[in-house]
Length: 156
Image 1 (spheres, helix red, strand yellow):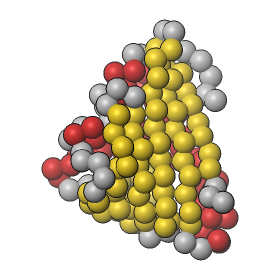
Image 2 (tube, one colour; image 1 turned 60 degrees about the vertical axis):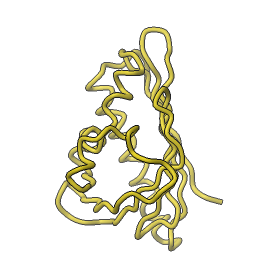
Image 3 (cartoon, helix red, strand yellow; image 1 turned 90 degrees about the vertical axis):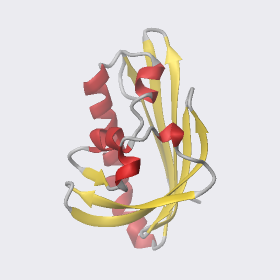
């Protein structure tokens, strides 16, 4: 069984405002300063919804504090839903499977952003050590989203 967690935040902006910032630059803004992900120059500001699904795209260094390499991530998007989110099913040096689904839904007064992650570590020890780290990174991402857009509700 793969470890799984999910986080949601209610934001004070329409869904399209959040969906429109999904680029590698936007992802890094959400992750900053804990983590940075590299990408070839042509992918940095390209909207994620312009990326092709169902094919391996590129490899990205995952840099702790934007400097120290801690993983090598191979991007693969299973599906793109420009009106509501995406499903990424990638792999990395540490994880044989990394499945990240982001859904953005309209709610009264704004939108709800939900990130669901399940993954399979290559070694059980990695899972034990990094499970709280992965959750912390997504808690941080949602903190940055709420700070940028304003929060109409609590984080779930």
